[in-house]
Image (cartoon, rainbow, N blue to C red; front, side, top):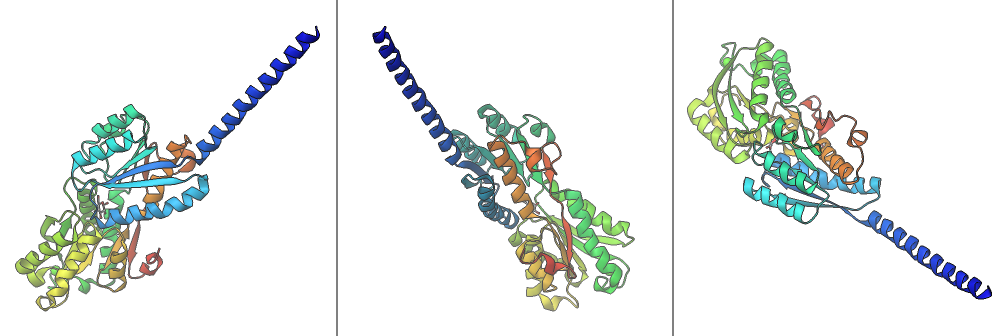
Amino acid sequence: MRRYCIRGARIGIVLVLILGLCACSNRKQSESEKEKSIRIGVTIYRGDDAFITSLYSYMEDAVKEKEKEIGRKIVLTMADAKKNQSSQTDQVDDFIQKEYDAICVNLVDRTVASVIVNKAKEAEVPLVFFNREPVQADLDLWDKVYYVGSDAKEAGELEGQVVVEAYQKNPELFDKNGDGKIQYVLLEGDQGHQDSMIRTEYTIKTITDAGIPMERLDIITANWMRNMAYATMLEWIGRFGDEMELVVSNNDDMAIGAIEAINENREVFTKKPQVVGTDGIKEGLEMVQKSEMLGTVKNDAKGQAEAVLDIACAEALNQKVKEIRPGIKGRDERISQHMVNQDNVNEYIGE
Ligand code: BGC
Ligand code: CA
């Protein structure tokens, strides 16, 4: 009997030790789980796009705040697709293979998102597209696919509004030849981009709807790029010279290219044509402040960067995205924009 008791006690002690060890290793596991960093891969369509590089640097800034908020380290890795869709698809493959927790994609070709969605779905890595919007059918392929961007129609209307307000205050600012119409040229973003055509349409519509007659001299795509816009403007100066009363640009970087060309050929103009842009990048705002540019639209790169990061982290942590981003509609979040002109530019500078 006594022997049984001793053996029983020994078994008991061993069991307690084993259980203790298990509990200990479980605790260790969950501690290391907590310590584990969240890894987010970001691929951008080209590294020399002014708006996208500013958006990415806001993402880097937002990481610091987010780490404090969630108590976990975040590793952000950026890849530049250099305008090549197949390189971008390889970059996504690489993030998947390295078991990243979420992937954020600024598509090169927004019509071929399904390839990337299917890969991510198979590997179960959540995806956040941003700025270059996939078609709805591709977004519908999986419920862990999101889009963050701005509303192109809103941007167009606000850009038009900049012109309308300035014209209503002082038509002479534009109408150099006094024919009651604004002769304008238009610099368009890249042809495949949802923002290009829609911004163009609504900028012009807003101005003409306000009863201001417009006459288009030319419209050319400069692919969102300052240097292409500069070259285009040089050509326009040769063709139209002082006839140009307004330059409408789908973004600030192209607007700045146009302004540079105008300033280098100042002697051609009795009065420089007005220039209006969109984005509110740092240099764009400075141009508005210096009265080189009539106005712009604040396309909130910071707000978009924060939304992308919030969604990616929420998915990585298995949290409900709607609780973290109440403004999201389904899996689509649009960050609102604001009109910027000389009256309010100081509110946006240094943001
Ligand atoms: C921005 C452009 C940018 C483009 C890139 C647009 O929304 O306004 O400045 O070049 O996105 O995709
Ligand atoms: Ca005129």
